[in-house]
Length: 196
Image 1 (tube, rainbow, N blue to C red):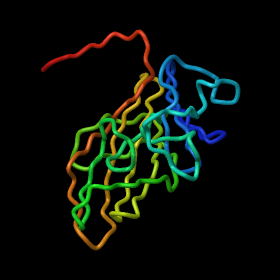
Image 2 (image 1 turned 90 degrees about the vertical axis):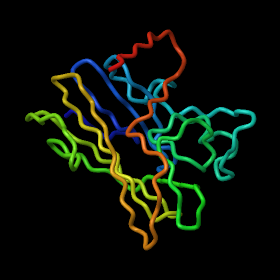
Image 3 (image 1 turned 180 degrees about the horizontal axis):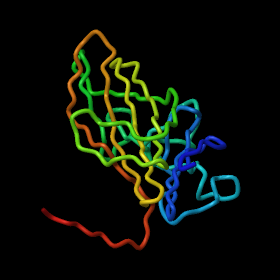
Image 4 (image 1 turned 90 degrees about the horizontal axis):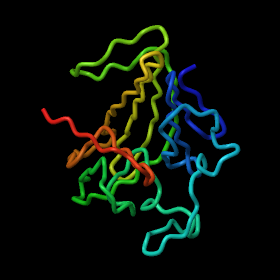
C-alpha cells in the first residue's frame, strides 16, 4: 500500500521517500515529514508528532490554550484569515466581502488509480498508483476543498492538486489558489530553480 492512515497520521510512501501529515484535534491537517523513507510514523519520535510550543505574538485557539497556533503549524493547506500570517495557498472572498476562511477536516478516501484533474494534463496511473482525497469544509463560505495526493510508488513521485466546490447559495471569489505550499523546518538545503 502506497497510502495508509494509521494513528491519526496519513502516510504516503514511494520506494525511496515518505510524506507524512497528521490531524490536529481531528480538524487541521498538519505537515510533519517529507524526505528519505522512514518507518517512524509518530509513535516513537517527537519529529513525527505535531509540535506543541508556546510562541509569542501568535494567535491561539482558546480551546487548546497556548499549545497550537495556525501561525506556527506546518499546514497542509494554509488559508487566509484564521491566524496564519504566512503565505496562504487559498484566499476566498465571501458573499459579505470578507476574506475569512475556516477550512476544517471532514474525511478522507483512499482509492486505487488517480483522480483526473478536469481539463488538465496528468500522468497515467499504473497498477500500483493510489490517490488520497482529503475533504475539508468551510462553514463561513459554504465551500468544500478536496485535496488530492496521488502516489506513483515505483516512480518515486507524489503529485497533488485540489478542487474547490462552492456548496453555498452565494458566489465566492477566488483571490488566490496554489495547489501546494510545502512548509519545511529549517535545515541545510540546496535551492534550485529551473527557469523556463
